[in-house]
Amino acid sequence: MKYKKHNPFMAPKGYFNILEEKLLKITKINLNAYGYKIPKNYLNELEKEIIKKTLKISKRRNNKKLKSSILALTGIAASITLFYNIFWSEDPIIIEKEEVFEDFVESYYLEDLNTYEILSMLDENDIETTLKYSSKP
Amino acid sequence: MEQQSLFVRALKHPDSRDEAFSSLVSEYKERLYWHIRKIVIDHDDANDVVQNTFVKIHLNIESFKENSSLYTWMYRIATNESLNFIKTKASKMGLKNQEWIESLAEGLIADSYFDGEEADLILQKQVAKLPEKQRIVFNMRYFDKMNYESISEILETSVGALKSSYHHAVKKIKIQLRNEI
Image 1: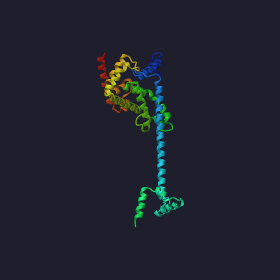
Image 2 (image 1 turned 135 degrees about the vertical axis):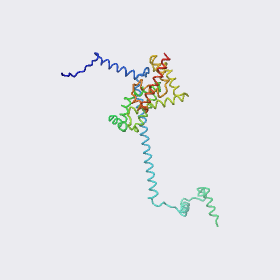
Image 3 (image 1 turned 30 degrees about the horizontal axis):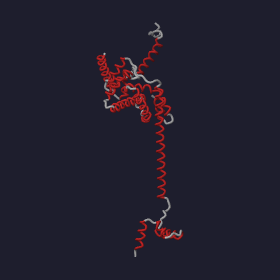
Image 4 (image 1 turned 180 degrees about the horizontal axis):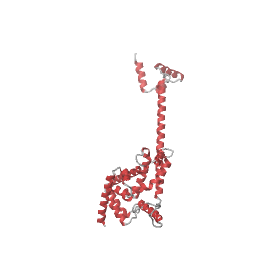
């Protein structure tokens, strides 16, 4: 006896067209959630709104990264400068008290300033120390 | 799963992130909106929550470790966002979460974004009376026809507990509906 392989089950005529419609309907009902509605065109607008928001966040994030890297670079540059100045620069110029005094006297002669003019250039503390200095025997 | 990994990689990579995210939004916006809408009830609230959800997804995609599917992870964020939203809104109004949801369901009849029949309205009011967890499980199982395994992954609850939750919810609704009709 030969076995003929065929499907013994049958479906009503045009069933699969109706099935598709039915399935689409079920999905729609499911999505619309038993009475809930949304404004017209809402979902398209929603997509735009979300993309706009997230783009803003991305931009802010990138700006933050840029700012922090600029800050880091500035910090490094400042540290290098400070390090160089401390360890590699030439000896600092040390001005002795006598030199200052000489400069002072020099300008007195060169610029032809009188005593009152020089006095007006000194503040009270200077005058005090000058006086104290001069009052010593 | 491999396809998901590629997509997640595209979402994480700075060069392809924007394009991948755009297709993610267009693929899931509707599903997530309806999931959220059924939890928070009001359209404007759902609109706020769905936007916050996508912003959170965008911000946290780099920390997504692919222990679950992307879809589950997004649903989990949406659920948590919705519950946090209800908590904040209810406390602002000086109400308990449950009271706030019940008041929203009572107002559905006047909601311009609700056009269900009387039976829908009665059902929504009864669903709103359920405890928070039972309400979410009921929504996902009854309205969204989700299987217990997926709900279990999203809510991080055992299948047994979910089945019992759903069973209790259905029982309560049946009793309430009998009294109502």
